Image 1 (tube, rainbow, N blue to C red):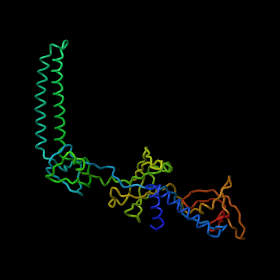
Image 2: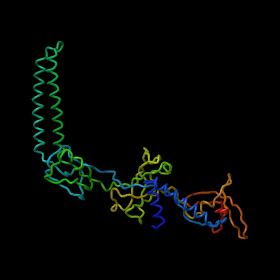
Image 3: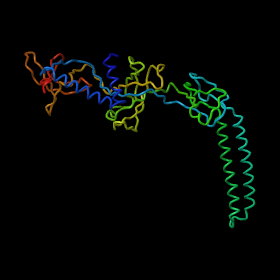
Length: 355
């Protein structure tokens, strides 16, 4: 990748992430250019040649590598870590046990909840037996007694369910096959507290599910299609173009700080899987159209009189004439032209530089 391409990529990324700063810099640069050009003698003619080349129309966007299939696992209750069976970098299968809490206290809590539930179920049955003849004439004392018994039974039923859940989830089981990328600092003998549970996370990522997720501006959204071929350039590998194709186009836009809208587009990368890491940033070029061996001129040489487009051509005898053309594929600097014109002919941009 040459320095010009690197500069263009840098400017594109800054336009997305720091639009206000870039806008200020652009204003300063334009002002400087206008002042500089005002000091130079003006030329009223600029020339170029009709050239034959391959044109590729693209749409650019920034994004990062993400995993479509990943899992974060944490304990549902505090406790002492009994063992950790994996380390970062381990490849695990779905259903593999990763770590576990000491279950002595959790099992005790479960047994106690079961005992309490059994006790209050018996109490409730006894109360029901006492008030069975008062269904149509229940005084306040009887109603209070019955309601208390029902509430106690319901409370310990829920307590048993919670204890059972905590006991069942005392061992973290991977729901996917993948690579362990973090064990959240867990180690055997450590006490996981209520405040540390949220950070003691084991993360498993299926590295085969990595995609490049880009944010496409709403202006270019209509140019993106499922199956469309793309080229991704990651910041970590600026001299490599990774091929891919569009596999998902978002249907929910997100507002930017400048008031615009961007939409997510997921790209499946078709090579260099071993190099990909979640979080790597980069840019993607969506190939909108491509034509080979077409006649082109710089875009500014094409004029329009309100009805037709034309270029001004210098003939072999030195005279100039307007040649009507039809425009085709367009890039940032160059445009395809179709008409009575040949490769190598000189085109003229008149009154260039005049105020």
